[in-house]
Image 1 (tube, rainbow, N blue to C red):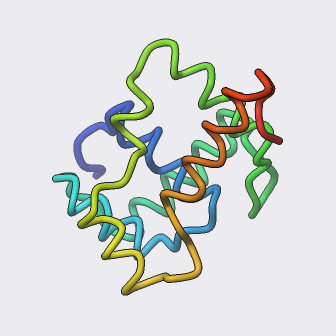
Image 2 (cartoon, rainbow, N blue to C red; image 1 turned 180 degrees about the horizontal axis):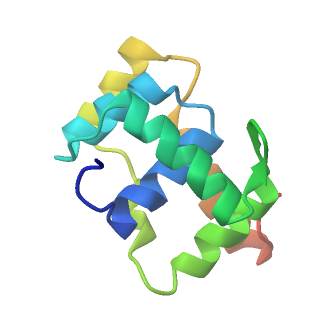
Length: 122
């Protein structure tokens, strides 16, 4: 039997993090820092389900162009900046656990490109 339902905030954060190749283990750690309680297995299952049901990629990879368009669409209903911008604690967690992924860089690159060009980053 499954746990409680996933919130839109959890789904948005999961899709963003998984699409930039944050490991499921580290996503679970970041979720814990944000006050969510999800297991690594639950996160992996949800990511696979969302990728398929939202058509965000194929089999085992995310299509970043489609993910970006999806994020733009949900940004009309949710405060994406509040959800995605990492706190100093989250950045330190990632530096310690998966230093090759810079959360601020990925978020700011996406926002800067869109603001400067009006184009969605593919």
